Length: 381
Figure (tube, helix red, strand yellow):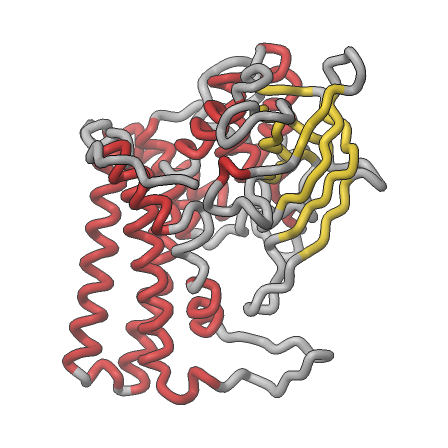
């Protein structure tokens, strides 16, 4: 696919810039911003037409929107899990009734979602989950009991899609189902924020104690197939927007290197150039993959390996060019007084998790080895 931007695409770019420029975000809450995006028709532009309240755009125009959104430094999305993960999964595996119930509220920015996959004993090994869902009598309602962890934005979400074991004697990837669980169930759903070393709490623990779930996507027992399909949607156009943010961070690291004199060191200069070159390579690889010439099985795993390691190395480089001052915060802190971080310190600390969350490097390499290269499967106990 040719990713050159034509006349229509540039007109679309102008429309995007004008809209973003006309909608200031200062003082606007994350949930209010989602509703504003919904009113503008900017949620779900990658979905097919189906009467769900979204506008549609070509793949190239989706790239334009993602990149311009990042360039405008618009707020981090709180609705992206519903738009980018839940919605494509419903479009592929859900019933028409489920699509009509859940997609329009996502398109309007009215209902926010979180993902209930990882558990304390089943993080990278997703097939080892223990959260159970039992039918409530002879009805189609399930009662969900168990614990999920590292659940992004669960403290803001209205719904959670949960991978749970619906066949008690099943093992590994068998007997799992993909359930849609409302979060507003006092006494049955308990969300506890996890304090990170950055001082923030994007992640949460979620405890289900007989929580009610009335919707199964893809049919009972087909949860593994649906869950794997969803993970394929996790990396796509959004990767290109992510790279715009990476470029901003790299620029800040380069400016700091010049200000501190670290750029006078030829070894540091070589590392800065390498980071720039690798970022350009990631962009072209992402465009190639989206264009169809690189969409083979394993492409999402390759992308995750590329950006996870790159971003982590950038965080390390940020501390190197800062020198000794990188270890000093802008003010004294104590357990009672949360510390503050400047942008480069935050980059370093948060990027330590880049090679773990979203599928660890080890898991991605195993996927590539087994599914792309056809190597023997790793022994499992």
